[in-house]
Image 1 (cartoon, rainbow, N blue to C red):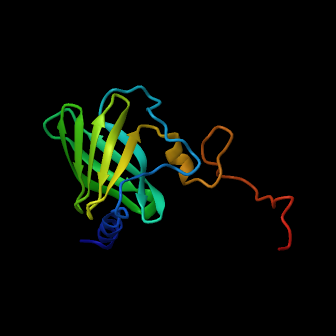
Image 2: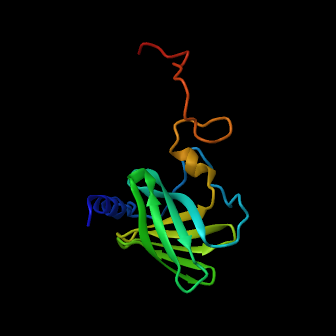
Image 3: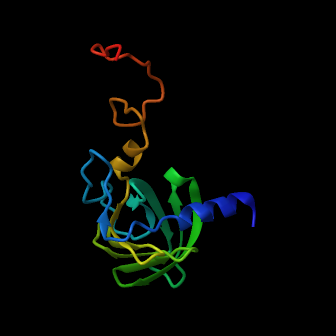
Amino acid sequence: MGYRTAHMLCCLMLLTGCGETKTAEAPGVEAPGATMSGETSKDGNWQGFIPYEWRTVRLQLTLTGVDTDSPTGFIDVPDLGALNAPVSVSTDNDRVTVATPFGATIEATFTGEALEGAYNGTDGTSSTITLIRHNPAFAAFGTPRLASDGGPALDYEYAEPANLGDG
């Protein structure tokens, strides 16, 4: 196992919660309830948030072939540097179960526009999770500033607040 794979798995193994059921949302952003695309397939990039220690982190689940006999997927937790970890996917009608390589699971129901259910950590904790496509809070969460179009502001000048005193 290479360094990157070992690092990614170590980061993912830490995603276990803190002993109680929690709901994770981006600070200051209401959790959107539906995808903006109107797609009805379970395949795609599903984005949401889970609690991790004292903070909230982003989670992206990429699913393909969900309505076939051999669904596949990957999980990303970009705030912890964990990317493209393969997952085991099983389905039963609108129910999707995802098993991570480190023992955590996601059990969710496809509502037509979202995957809603639970993220079950390796220590027995459970966190409510809602994953949607094209989640606007997902991009905004890790971006220090947003441009007027809602995307990340890549070029900006720092302006000291007018009322900043000497302390």
